Image (cartoon, rainbow, N blue to C red; front, top):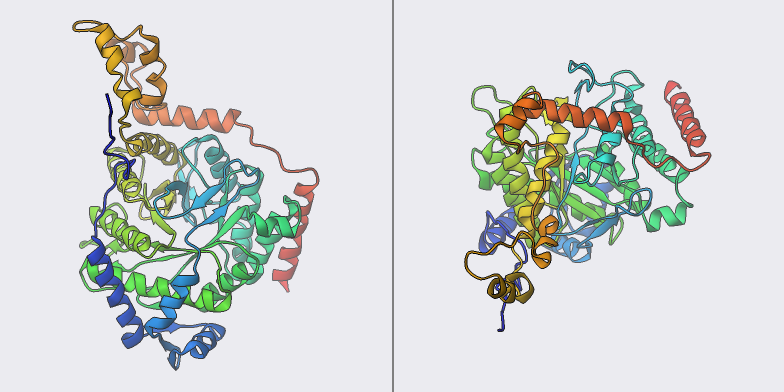
Length: 485
C-alpha cells in the first residue's frame, strides 16, 4: 500500500497573518515612507554612509531611496549562528526556526525565595541564567533584570559576567555604549579559545532597540557598528505603541516598524557588507484606559506574528516576543497570556522569541513565570511537530494483526512510540482527584515554585575554564576604574 504524505511541503502546523501580497504592499509602503517621509538618524557616521550611497540628508533626517534598501537586503545573511560556551546549544537564527529565551532590563524582580517584589540587584542575572540552563525548552539567555546596585552604565557588563558563569547556552547581551560592549566582548574572549575562534563561532549576540516613530539613536548605531566590526551577530528590535507612536491601525504600525528596521539593516550593510543582523518587531497595542503598552493583548500577538511574516517574506532573521504578561504575579491571567503568545510565536515562525518571564508590562522579572513558560513551550513544540503520515506511522499491518476489539497497550511497536508521540508535563497536574488530594492539593503555582527551588538548589552548570573567573573580575575592575574618571 503506497502512502503519499500531504506534509511533504509543510512538516509542521503554520499560521500566517499576512498573505504574500499583503507583505509586498507593506514593504512597498515602508520603502515609500523611508524615501518620502524620511527617518531621523542621530549618528553622524551613519548619515555619512547613507549620503555616500545616495540618500538625501536634511539635518538629521535621512530620505533613503529604495535601491539602498534593496541592495542591503541582497547582502544581508538569511541566517546566522550563536554558539554558546560549549557549542552544544548552538542557535541557528533563520526564518521559521523558533527559539525561546527571557527578556532584559526589568526594574523589579520577584525574589524566588520570599516571593516579594523588590528592586533588581546583583545576583539576579545569575539566578536567571542558572534557571534557564536547567530548563530544556529555553534556548538562550537574557538577564530578566536591570541592576540597581552597581555603576549604572556597567549594569549590562555585570549581567553578562553573571550569565556566562552560570550557563553554556547562547547569551543575548545588551550595552549602553561601545565601551561597555567592548567589556562584554572581553569577558566572552576570556572563556573562548582566542579572538579568531570567538569571531568564527560567537558565543553571544548583541541586542539593541530603536525608537518610534522613525528614529534610531546615536549610541544604538555606534553599538551596531562595533558589533559588526567584531563579527558579533546583532538584533535590532522595536515597534510603535499603536495610537501613541503610530496611527491606530496595525497596518500603519507595521509600516513604521519595518521602515525603521530596514533603515538599520541598510546602515549596517553600508558599514560592513554581509554583517549578520535580525530585525525584531514588537508593535504593541495601547491600553485605552492607561495609555501603557499592552504586552499581553491579542493585538500585540497578532501584530508581532505579522511582523514575523514580513521578515520571512524578506528572508531576514527575526526576533519576536512571548510570555510577557500584564499581570503582577503568576496567576490565571499570566497563564492565558503566555499560552496564547507562545503558541502564536511558534506557529508564525517568530525566530528568536524573547521576554519569557515578564510581568507588569515588562517591569517585573519572574523566574517562576519563566518555569511556566518553559512548560508551555514544551506543549507548543509538540504541536509544532505536527502529525507524521507515512506507512510506518499508519501501521496498517499492526491494525490488521490486533483486529477489532483488541488492545495495543502491550504491542512493542506501538509502545516504543509513546514517549516520542506524547508530551509529558513536568508542572501541570494530571492526577485523578483522590491522588491530588492525598498529595497535598497543590495548585500550579506551588508546583512551579517547587520546580524552581529544586533547580536553584541542585542544578550545577558547567564551570568556567580555569582562570576565566579571575580574568572576568579584572575586566570588571578595570571598567569600574574607567567609569570613575
